[in-house]
Image (cartoon, rainbow, N blue to C red):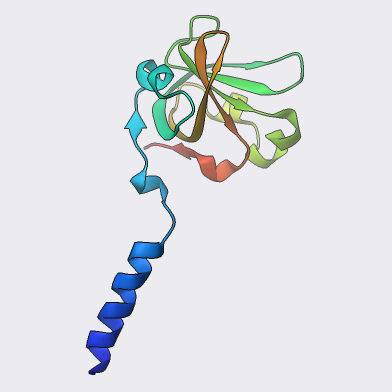
Length: 122
């Protein structure tokens, strides 16, 4: 067997067993996120407001400011230092978050535990 042929077979086998990456996830707008409760997806939108909850977690309201948001991204207090100061740096910026959609008080929300789950769009 020639070396290039074997390399092609190896790459084909690896691609079949590789874990799902972000490019394999569905991307939706914030208004559609509620339809995907329990699913791991990507949601993109503009950070309209940033508020601290009573438990010191940070809630980023996407597209519409709190309390009118349809979708939000939550950064738990214990994880907030990993993100820097998103309440300042991300306000009015377009972002994409990757995570599992939860329904909180009838609205879609995603919890971000790692900065890699949040991407600033250009």
